[in-house]
Length: 164
Picture 1 (cartoon, rainbow, N blue to C red):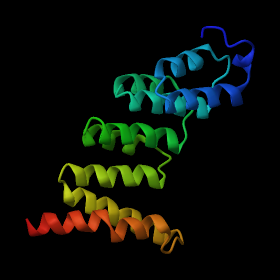
Picture 2: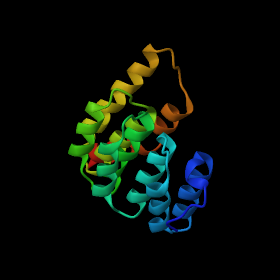
Picture 3: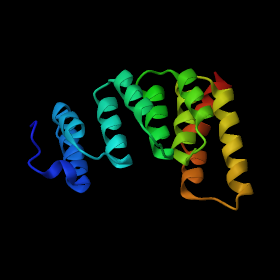
Picture 4: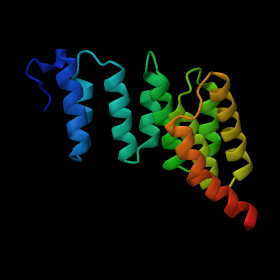
């Protein structure tokens, strides 16, 4: 797979290959395509970081993240979610969350669920209240994410915490 036969210059093809190889469990091939590509954009970087996390290689995902020249909210969310879900390291996830200047709802959700998963319901509730307030102040009144989160997982866990 070392030679991409001219496709190393085509982002659409290389990103499609990375994604396809990841979905089929061919993570080594996904990495070869990434490494062999002449140009990698944010989609390429985010895709290969996701591949590494799916393989449980959090350290490699962190290394890739550190090598990125530019990041978007989704890049941060991938790594935050990795620390929360794979390592259960909410402290490191919180450090990344605090460093990010681009927090999206996925980042917020990962942190809230992460704190909930480790039983730190006060922090989960605190973050939930902050994002709910910020969304309201920005004119976001009742979207599906806030509604889904508020009526399902987080309140259930908060209730269990208070009852137990």
